[in-house]
Image (cartoon, rainbow over all chains, first blue to last red; front, side, top):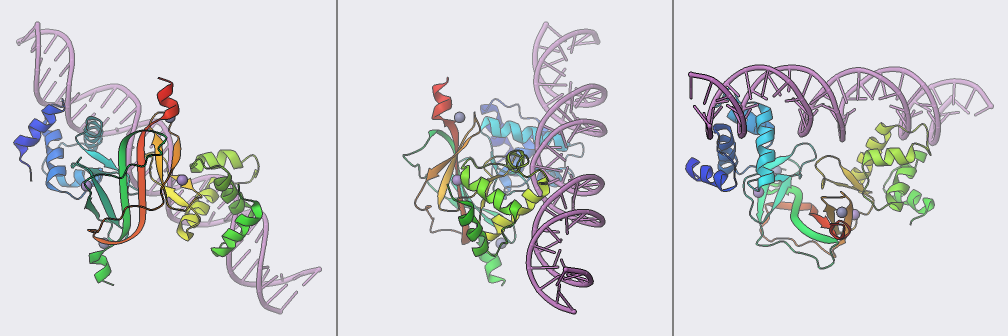
Length: 136
Length: 136
DNA sequence: TATTAATTTGTAATAATTACAGATTTAAAA
DNA sequence: TTTTAAATCTGTAATTATTACAAATTAATA
Ligand SMILES: [Mn+2]
Ligand SMILES: [Mn+2]
Ligand SMILES: [Zn+2]
Ligand SMILES: [Zn+2]
């Protein structure tokens, strides 16, 4: 749970001016580690910032990803999910309830035989989460 | 390079009737390890099977993925790529030329602390391939 | 204050995928 | 072989996530 102030600094450090919208989106990402989609963020923030446009969320998240403030997860074939936690970790997506969980991982395994220079590593697990398994 | 005959058996083993279209799509996947998209497959097969519909390719690939004959890769935010090689391996996508390479990997690292039962593991690397790096 | 730049917004365009219903092919029954 | 039914394929329309873009608003600068 990071404060508004800290996220403001975080944006400035990445050369991004902390507008009301940008700060609200980053705060949301930071306080909800649920890897939300654009639509989820919009539904949640629209009541708070009534003038908010979905395009702004798309633009802002693209900016965040390009600047290294957030990660885009392609774990779901339908929607892109966003993550404010850019540290090294993997993800587990439940094929039943569709929730995405963090999987802690200190470092990714890097194969010797790779065909180029690696800039990003994405590790996704899919399956049935413990909650859903118990409900069977 | 697998023969038509073998792929026919492969489909039958998965309970899929080897129609002309299905066999052509599987043969294409098998003979071109480029992880093609639906559009690429369509462009390549349409001249050979003039009546082929893009919907059939979508349906067939969905069937293949559900039956375990092929894998769907969400390594690219734009299009889904398909892979006829269902064995354990990772992928490397060049952010410049957009090619997707296989990365051999005997087994995926499985963390102890995972929130459920893992059914699939996807490991994607992104970066600049050796070819593109040499062209700078 | 006036001017300019940056940001946001709303709408329209794009493009991948899916839904669906009719046409065709294949298999089974008569 | 003919008839009937099931499976598969096809083409078009609908859906939906994302992007393009131009106008409106806001913030910064002179
Ligand atoms: Mn995460
Ligand atoms: Mn592969
Ligand atoms: Zn679940
Ligand atoms: Zn390349």
